[in-house]
Length: 418
Ligand code: GTP
Ligand code: MG
Image (cartoon, rainbow, N blue to C red; front, side):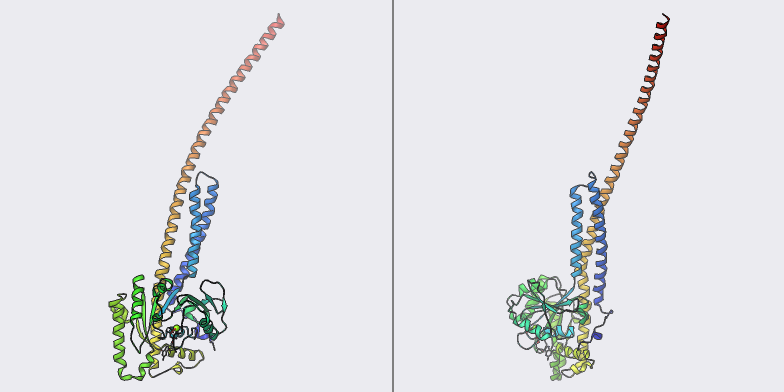
């Protein structure tokens, strides 16, 4: 039922900030690489001439070639990473599926996700799995098989399975967003390992809560640790399963304001990662399951409300889209800053270093050239001196010979006369 028309380029997406920045910095690094290679060839040629460039300098230049190539490789792989956390069954996997517009990750009642699952775009229309520590591509034919593969694997809960899904099936994957799904924070004692292994390079965190209950201590503790290890992480809070509130309309508003207040307090007063205004823009009331159903209907060409679970679908659906918009803005800006700022300053320092080295070499060449000129002048003078001397000698010799000849002639004629 896949309809590619649904996933056409959305160039107004805030993700384009990242996409364009990535293209630009990759182009710039391409130029830097060319420049470094050209300069190195030149430097090596000078080195062959000795005297001007020494071995250490030549090696330093060659190290720039590797440095720039390494940065380029990292740049090409750079992406935006979002990680989802929350208690078991709150709907983490469902939220990711709703954003991907397809049921990719297994979801269900009970403890479903049993290790970290990363969903990222693959080129060439292929879908496959890769387990941690292996390069083997395990082909995925369909979702059911993927779910089975994930369930059968007896994996350590903090290990990572990478799911490669065709980019063209979802604009978020196309634009280099990578999703990380996790087991419930309440089922693990290794939260520190989780953070060290999977969270340090995340651009955005999404805390998925169950709107039917309230934030638990395990969820709070997890984010306390995250915010100790990372300076000001970007955290969004989704109060999921909000469709359930339709059953109790008389309490809906009061429950919503209670949740909102707690979430904002958590971000501002407890974690101190946001101010009031920003925190208010980071808390949403959604239904992941309903959004996913609506999107699946849309992809079949049906109206989205066919996916509705309860009264008030439209508001929840808009709120989910609002979340996605704010999320896209936040993740692309954050990723540009964290990923590219450092590369652009490294690029600047590499080109600065090369420039000052080249300036030094140029100076040396100039001095060398002047020296050679002086030597040449000296030589010329000497040669000129020798020439004059020779001429003098020659003239003297000529005179001598002339005199000798005259003397001999004189002697000969004298002898004849006698
Ligand atoms: P674990 O992987 O076990 O940690 O759970 P999870 O957080 O990934 O939850 P999952 O997405 O598997 O959802 C658990 C169950 O809740 C599934 O049966 C979902 O269909 C259901 N569910 C998820 N989101 C919603 C929602 O917004 N509303 C309702 N009514 N059900 C939901
Ligand atoms: Mg799950």
